[in-house]
Image (cartoon, rainbow, N blue to C red):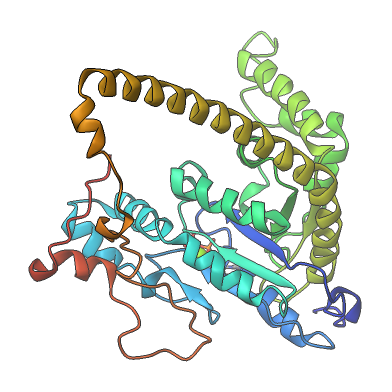
Length: 373
Ligand SMILES: Nc1nc2c(ncn2[C@@H]2O[C@H](COP(=O)(O)OP(=O)(O)OP(=O)(O)O)[C@@H](O)[C@H]2O)c(=O)[nH]1
Ligand SMILES: [Mg+2]
């Protein structure tokens, strides 16, 4: 049964920025169902706190919630596959890449709503690596995380993670995402209606318990009763994970029944503090560092340019007289009007956006998209 909706996690924290929740997880872990349940849970709070939802899965045919921004409104995944001769995963990846080129517009729309929403939720493509190991996934994550407090909700298919080796693989993957994003991280054990997650919490808090579970599974001893290579490898890896567990929060939820969502939102609130204390200072340090490097590079180029100009003028004094810049002559090559990202919750005009891939196929418009590398 879902818990009583509570106002403590709802709005009422006026002036606070919304938290962005990026849902990531293996195919079929329940990301979309989780987003849908979170959406209805937030609507059921008193007062209701409707979130702002982005669907970033171009290949999904049905989403169980109403997204505010849907990648499918901008990119036609089937057309991308045809146009670039790609298979399904390449098609999803390329569609996401194309969408990412306009992510500044998405951020503008999100920021416009920042005053009125408490949560921004991102649903990601089914194949986990399309988001976690692609340039566009990293660009989207960084763009969001540098403008709003952001947390990763790593969705785990609990019934499929009860075998110690599978559990460890999943945790190692989670660990790699934490390392890559460096964002506050919540392990969300989903589908607890089908399989309670206490075994996972036990393994995470008691290292010996996990090793004992590993030992009960075959392949850990050879014919002479000695521990196998695989056994010692798994033991070492579980030591690594022990360190990883110390830095994260774990909650169990059922996206089917709504169980555990109150605890999830509490974990999100704690993550906001973590973001402000740890991620933000690091982000500002990295930004300052980047600005310094950029300034040094600019100064260096400018010095070299001035030197070259001085040499040119010395060689050709007549040419130097005609050397001027007229901003009026500049061609306007701003292509931002090609198509726009659509906020479904706002009124839409008839010509407000162009299907990106169809636009590419239109000969008259002479647009040719670069081939993906
Ligand atoms: N029993 C149970 N089933 C669930 C729960 N959450 C999701 N499911 C089921 O798990 C399946 C996959 O759910 P999705 O929400 O599509 O998972 P996803 O991670 O978005 O899947 P992809 O985007 O295709 O990778 C569906 O059949 C859901 O009904 C849950 O909490 N309990
Ligand atoms: Mg999905």
